Each structure stands twice: as structure tokens, then as C-alpha cells.
Image (cartoon, rainbow, N blue to C red):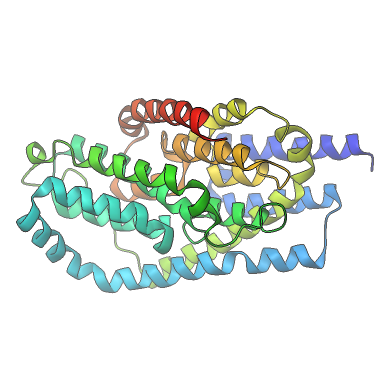
Length: 349
């Protein structure tokens, strides 16, 4: 097959991957299976099938899948003590500092106990706090920004970080477990703390007799295992998709200027950022390009509910509507995108 036909075929696969999950409800509901099919199609078109790729696709999802299952089960055991812990913190520190500590812990801790479990913990915390609904929506949005940023610090945190480390394992980046922490930590950690501070702002005036938002239901062991299985299939699909789309990324995406890479990824507000990372990131890119791509994906991913995993999980469990989310998230997300772009343009060489 000629190079032009390969690139055209991969362009069709990438177009379907980006458009159908947003426009077709059935595809959105069965996203893991759809991406798996698209991944196999991309690898087939590229002619990149190999024993090594298959082994990588089988092995890469293991760590994050185990984390989702084990930590989800452990949180189920810890959940009855959470109310007492929050009450003790509020009694000693006050409501505002307690919210700051909880959001910062969920954000930074998500890199270890995964964005999915952090979002489930957040839903439980919001239910316990019993605050006014508009404040709880804003708290949830800022906390999900913190979780979405913090989860990217290690390959355990979320599929985006898992797939990026997998794609950059070889030369010239030689990405290991702490690659993203070393590369993005100086940008992500202050962002998490800022989100925690904004989540806590005005907490004293937000108390209410009854919770504005309530978690829909606690997860059963069956739900935890099913979620872990979906994560495994999702990451496996992204490994295939990322490998198959590499010729397209190397030919077109790697040649774009950093400002274009950053702002183009504002589309992550409506499209899953892990899928975009799998399609865009390639080993031939410079560290600067990778930083701009990832920060564009991570920040814009918080703007709307479909943008990342914590948004989807938290909004579903707490019953937050898309319009409510957008009203609270878009102004902050736009300002944060601009602030990061200016600072990174000056400081990242």
C-alpha cells in the first residue's frame, strides 16, 4: 500500500475516532469496544502488527486496572470512616481549610489511586458536606480539575498518562514511571493547589441543612470489577490506536508549532483527552511539544463533562447537568488555559 493511501486510511480512522463518540450515542456508550476496533484498523492500515505490540497492549493496562480494582475495593472498606474524618477536620480546622485539604489530597493522590477512584471519593465527600447546591457544583468542578491534572503525574493515574508513557518508553525520551512527574510536575502541582484554594473559597457561607447534591449509589464488587475490565480494554485499545496512528502523527502533528498544538487541544473539552493523546503524541516530538500538547489536553479536559474521566464519573454520580457544569467550568478553564499558555511560552525552552 502506498504512503498516500496509508495516510488517507489513517485520516479516516482518526476522523471517525474523533467524531463518532461525540455524535453517536451508541458509540459513546460502548466507547471501549469502538476504540478497540479503531485501534486494530489503524494498526492494520499502517502494517505495524507485531508480537511486541500485542504483548505491549496486553501488559500496559495491567497496573492501572489493578489500581482501579484494588483501590476501589479498599475505599469501600474505608467509606464508613470518611464521615468521621471529615467531621474531625472541620472541627479542628474549619470548613474552608478542610475542603482545601480534601481537594488537594484527591488531586495529588489521584496519581496513585487513579482518577476514577478519586472521583468516586469526591462524590462521597460532597454528599457528606451538606452545602448549597450551587457551591457544591462549583466545588465538584474545581475538584475535578484538580483530579484531572494530578492524575497525569504517573501512569497509574489515568489512561492518558498510561498511554503517553507507553508511547514514549523508547529513545529519545526513555519515559519511565516518573517521566511525567519530572516533566510536568512543576506545572501540574501548583495548578492542583490553585484548584483546591478556589474550591474552598466561600465555604463558610455555603452551609445548608440538607445536601444540595447526593451520590446516586455506592459501588458493589460487581461494579468495581466491571469498571476495572472497561479500563483494561480502554487502555489496550489506546495502545493499538496510538501505535497505528503514529505515521500520521509523525507526518502532520509533529510539524505543527507549539502554540497550534496547545490551542488545538481545546477540543478536549468535548472529546476524551486520552484518545487525543494516543492520536497525537509521537516519539519524534520534542519535550517542549509534548508539554504543550499534554497541558492543553489536561486543562481543556475539565471544561465540559465529556472531557475527562473524573468529570464523567462525578457528574453522573451527583446528577450534575451539562449546563450547570459549563457555567461553573468554562470561565475558569479559559482563564487557566490562557495563563498556562503565557507562562509556558516564556519559561518552557
